[in-house]
Each structure stands twice: as C-alpha cells, then as structure tokens.
Image (cartoon, rainbow, N blue to C red; front, side, top):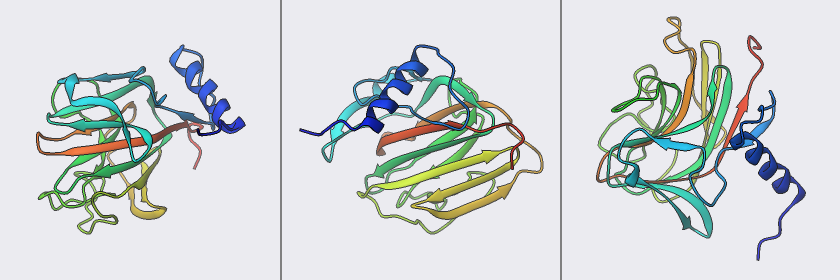
Length: 205
C-alpha cells in the first residue's frame, strides 16, 4: 500500500479546491488529475476516447481509438506552466495544448507536440506550426515528462528537463485559453499522468 505524504495530501486539497471553484493561488502548482475520474475535464468530441486506467502501477488518463481533445475546464491559461508525464505506444501521436479555444475539431491554440515514432516528422517538444523538432527526445513505450512555460509571447518547452523549444511569437497568436490533451487518430494510444498547472504572475519575465 502506498503511503500518503503530507505533500500529496496538500496537493489533493488544492485539487479539490480548484474543482470546487475556489481561487487558484498564483505561483503554486495545482494537480489537474485526481487519479480516480475525469472531474474538471471535458472532451470536445468523442468522449469515449478517454478513460482512467492503471498503467505501470499508477493512475493515468488514456486516450485511444478516436480524434478527441480533452480540456481542463478549471482555469484558462494566460501566463502559466503546464507539465505532465506521458507515454506513447509505437506509431502514436498526441499533444498538449495551451491557450486553446474549446470547440469541435482541431483546437485553435498552441500545441506542444507528443510524438516519438508517428509518421508525422514533427516530434515531441515542438511548438506545432511554429517551431519544429525532427528528432524525438524519447522512445515509445517509455514515460517522459513535457514541461511548458509560457510568459507573454515567450514559450519554452522542455522534455525530460532538456529545452527543445525556446520561441518568441512576435504575432502574439494566442493570448489566453484552456489547457487540453489530444487524442489524435484511431491508431494512436497515449497515457498521461502527474499533470500539473501553475498560474504565473502576469508580465513577469
């Protein structure tokens, strides 16, 4: 049986508060996934693409079989950090969206690519349509961590603590929106766990 740490208990309380509509404190990490269900999350289409499973002994969000985007509907991101552990099966494609608009189809917003071996040459750590990385920093069927930091028009994407994207969007294409996970296509299967959000002070560099 896994022991519950004081830190884990505090994070659980923070999540409960966030889902209950209580204010999120600037500069503090908030867990986005309670490990039991998808409370706080909403699919834009094909909700059957998403389920909570136990993968490698830990709760995870699994997507497979459909195109769908799962939005975290607790707070929109302006300046924020968003990180998660993920695992793709061989040939799978996914992504982590931020400042995204809720709606059907492919969301309007920034996407941090999640792709080790899918036929799309744009690999994990890319800022899709803005900055391309053609060499995957991880392998399929292994857990990796992607960490997004967005302040104003400056976007940094790290994979396993390695900076893959450091990009300034001079056009300020997206300034505010939701965080989301991507179910890309019927042949892609991806798992996410240990998802966290941090609101950053506006205008801080």
